[in-house]
Length: 293
Image 1 (cartoon, rainbow, N blue to C red):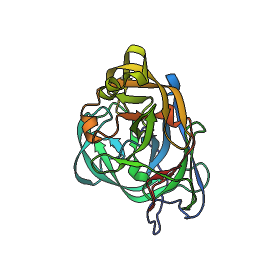
Image 2 (cartoon, rainbow, N blue to C red; image 1 turned 90 degrees about the horizontal axis):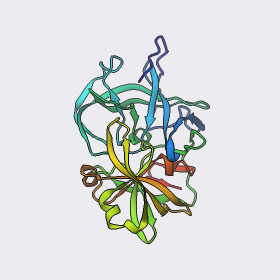
Image 3 (cartoon, helix red, strand yellow; image 1 turned 45 degrees about the vertical axis):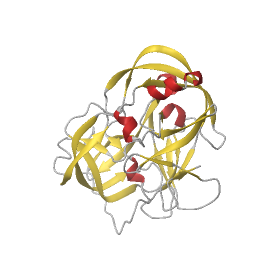
């Protein structure tokens, strides 16, 4: 959190179960503050409230849990145990899990999205943003439109056209899309926290014909703020399903290293903001999920 608002009333939760708009069946529209960068990249922020403290968090679907930096406003959160936070570059940081109470995702229209109790990862140091992770959305169904800058939460429903996400990470709490580059199948991590999509150098070297080199040297940074050297390529064509085909997509390439192992060797790509912002997504993390259309 970067802004503390005093004397705000604490949101009360009455029998809240799971993650739903406060009055259950109403639609809630959550605005996104989108900051654009080069090559179609960008970052999306939401406004979160922890008790009487409110501020921005970066929407990061490749974070299995939300992550906050130790600060005076959260120093009193009850500790639940030590944990390790692994970044998109495979860098592990020793942190601790804490329990936050009365947590809200602020809506511009409709009701806020809230949790009475929410487990978050608190790290002593971080050069990046506070991150709103995927676990906050367990039990929810919503649309995500990064280009329009909004998320819309709505009641559970069925309908046709759903596709299952590919579950990733040792705890199976992250999700990926089954994609094709030419005739080569590969899974891409669904990652709103990545400004630009990325490809594991090992995969690229095995499939050089699918990519065109754009820049030999570039600096890239992850959501935690860590920067590394990389090369920039364009994928000639990528099909992410449901008729969603893109050409000349920019990918940064680096050695995934520990990240490759954490993804089980199944996902040599990270599909970031530049790809995900091209489409409107409907996401379901309820009993039938995780799935998308």
